[in-house]
Length: 192
Image 1 (cartoon, rainbow, N blue to C red):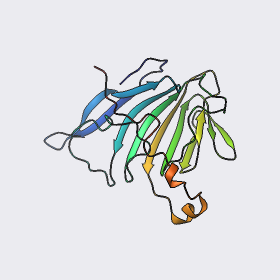
Image 2 (cartoon, one colour):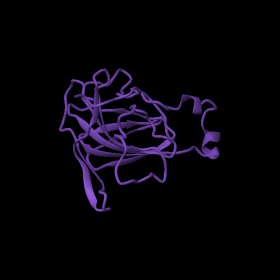
Image 3 (tube, rainbow, N blue to C red):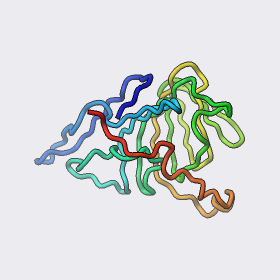
């Protein structure tokens, strides 16, 4: 689904599979079918792929488009998700951030593709640029693009589970405040 707003090039997605003879083939090749712009937050989402379990079942063809769901964060507990987010300039609030502070029970690999983004943690901030990778391990965090250019970050999210040792360190209500749906959790479908 697309919604108005500034946009860089929509990512291309190539999905492989097998034909009736077991030969490797391309099942689809085109722009990412689910993409959405949230003008109130200055963020764009390109949902690339997701799985719901591990090991992920691999058949000859996918039965349906796996990204035509919600913008849920994190993935299912044993699932994965890959998305590209665009953080547009001019959307940093008075608190100095663009996204809400949130924590997810997942391991998230963030790879900056272009631009610059600030990772905001409880005690510090880290500025990331092209080629930088952050491994987000269930911590409270937020994001801010404080530049005048779009920042694109590829996120690979892997469902996780907090250990008892970590839960002993966190506030008693930490699990109650986990982001389990997403700031924009509603079904998304491709525009015709």
